[in-house]
Amino acid sequence: MFDALLHASHMCHPEDLPTLVAAHAGPVGLRHPVLYLVDLEQDQLVWLEPLRHTGPRPDTHLSVDASAAGSAFTELHVRVTEAVDGHWLWVTLLDGTERLGVLRLTVENPDETTVRRARRLASLVSLMLISKRIHSDTYRQRARVREMTASAEIQWSLLPPGTFATEKVVVAGMVEPAYAVGGDLFDYAMNGPVLHAAVFDAAGHDLSSAVLAGLTVGGYRNARRRNLDLDATAAEIDATLHGQFGHGKLVTGVLAQLDTDTGDLRWTLAGHPPPVLVRDHDLHQVLDCRAGLPLGIGLNRDRPVCHTRLRRGDRILFYTDGLTEARDADGAFFGLDRLVTSSSPMTGKAILRRRPSANSSGRYSTTTANGSATTPGCCSSNGATTRA
Image (cartoon, rainbow, N blue to C red; front, side, top):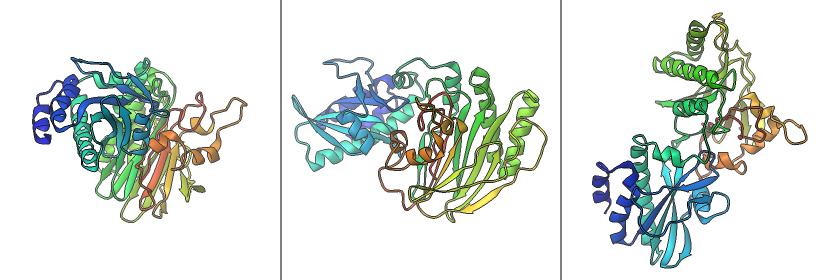
């Protein structure tokens, strides 16, 4: 079944994937597959309607917080519920550690063999989703529950996958508000044992800020792929922005490198808040480092590169000031302590959904969060979260 499904997927129309899965999985007892994709804010699971759907229509939207599908999505457990013609299996769709959605299957007997086969099918479907979604707007449309601004469209196209993990490191990133991102973004890459990560906060909250952010991350990737050091990378971005915009456009940022073999963390600041070391779920240390000038000024001043050694299980939180400066209904600042608490593996639903279910005590962990001060609450402002 798996070989035939994989072979048939090569010439499959992106919107015919659910139908193709049904044709090959049904004969082995995994009937009536229904694919749900998570929306950008990870609040809802949205039905991926086949190009030519037949039969009863399933629920089109399911709550992540209040449904069996949501439980499977959040906890990474196969959920079993009663159905008219048997049982429904709800299986998480995963790309590595990135949760894509949930696959619902109808089975007669949810025994161990059937569940194992359903997991394998979900793994294959996830790979097929990843390979097909770049060729169609349908998957992106299904992941949206309201209109997106042009600036957000630009910035989402620049972002790397939201989660990456190895045995030594976990990286998770997110941006909020998802449909009106205003100049904040993150980027990362794993090159050999070294994780490269950065968070940028481009001035403004309109289309021009998205253009500025795009040039910033393009300059960052170019310098990174030329193996430049952190200070040289920052200088390169600074010169690129200044050469294009003069003195009119500025970007703050934090650029970091983590050697996952040794735990050696190096970082430099460009007018940006310092990262925070979270150890044993508490704010252990603000990793202060004399900040250089924001990017785009063009003065070619030296930017200090600071250093610390992480322990296994440590988490590093990078963020933009919009998160800590967000206010609640009473006007109180959200603050750094609440940001740390909300980034704990035990709380903060958005970050929880971006991390593997296994305990990360054997890994280094960094968390980066960008923020727009107009949106209160942890990680519900323009944000990026990176665990390393």
